[in-house]
Length: 437
Ligand SMILES: [Zn+2]
Image 1: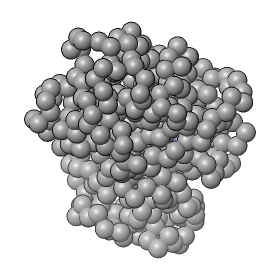
Image 2: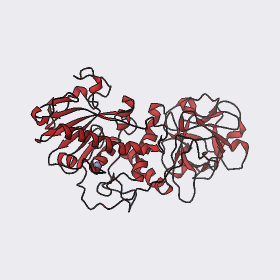
Image 3: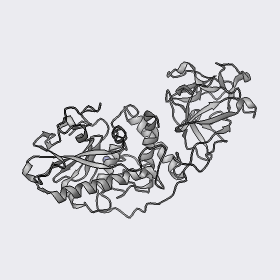
């Protein structure tokens, strides 16, 4: 098998016993971030973020203190322009919550400092579902990815605030009673249906615990589209002895475009791209076909580059010099067709295969399965594998949403569901800062 930088697990065989899964079409109100003021109440001790002694100087420390409603416990959250879920947090002194020295270390202290819009003064509000209440968040500092927390997880009034790795334990969760969005505007934000919030948080925590390089990996489908400026190129690895007509070639391309679009459409609300995702349409190009014997391909035009008998993993492949998987720096100077004929993903079609595999390198499914489903509404094994290309996980050993199927839990749904949509969006939400979005 191929090298898999992140998981690319063989899906179990999907049986025909897949029930009808109604896709609830819920128009999510687009919500833009707006400025709001609030106390921040810790979920562990019930204390408030407090500007100690109402000190107005640069470097004054922020602590937690018994909540008393005073001005020095009132924080003003102002959205950072162009970053929909980031805020600067001003104290009553008009200065900004700041990680001292822009340290990325655990236990670096939280102070106030004159506002300069640096990433150590930007806080991402990451919703954490808490039973019985609402508006509960991790306060995640952008430069470090760590969270504002009382030192040692203390519940004592007077404890200093520091940064520590984020999780959903009560000491790291704050309730912002004044949190609001304007309910209008454009761009959308993190507003999944309430019943999905907790499952989504659990899924993301699971990624954080099990992916060795979740935030450092840079070849997700997201990265591929961003690198191209809004499209994907495919190579078809025809791992079969069957012949392919020009018409079949074109139908495979059309099906690929239709199916891939089903995922891309999850990033749209009423035709508008969600949460600073830049593209309302992501074209799929097929730039190459790889085959054992040129005679299998029954066309003579040059609409795609053809690679003959370049065998890897016991299957034909397009030239590695053209593949993003092999050239993640984006240097395609040795690609025979040039950079425009580079491919981001392979559609690897293997004769006699049931199930599939997916990863940053592309998707692999049975050739008979794919060709036999060219006009199916949902080529569901392919859809599942595309989910892996964008970082989504399998759910063989646990189920965050019991009783409801979804495409990433193989065999439980035959189409992308609302839960799949929000898992997909969650990836973009967490990665987009690398693109300044
Ligand atoms: Zn899978």
